[in-house]
Image (cartoon, rainbow, N blue to C red):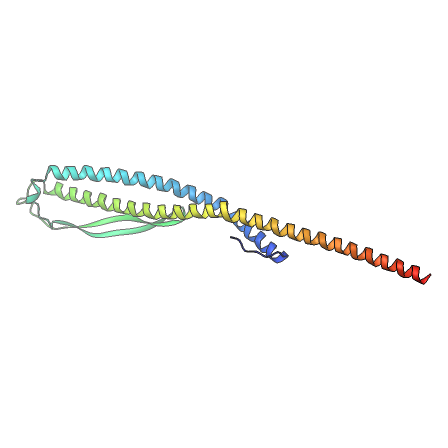
Length: 204
């Protein structure tokens, strides 16, 4: 509900607010469209990473009988390096890289596949963490997209029509007031002329 008064100041304020929204609307619509595209793209990214992760897990499961010989503390994630980037005005986290801590192991006393096992665990960690980042990015983009869509709807369906309607009401009121004022001035002048004529007739 747009609040206004039937005067020139209120009319100027509403007109200014209307112009601000009309100028901003194409930019907001463009942002919404860009966010929509990014959401679709990120959803696809999550699906691809999920499929990749499932594939790696199957490789892991195929070697499950051998993993009992694999030291559980041989490899671990030491550091997750982060960066950020702007997507359609939204700052999202980006995985810049992973640092692993691999303990020294004896090539003679360890199973032949130990080096392959280390690489497999690194790949699993990389894909798993990338997937979490993509899900986080998707959540943030979805939230921003919903907020932007709400703003587009607010401007397009509520505020812009509301301001236009209020401006028309004020203009009509002011026009009616002006017409009434002119009419009353005309009546006053007519009455003054009649009075003057009467006075002149009395003086004759």
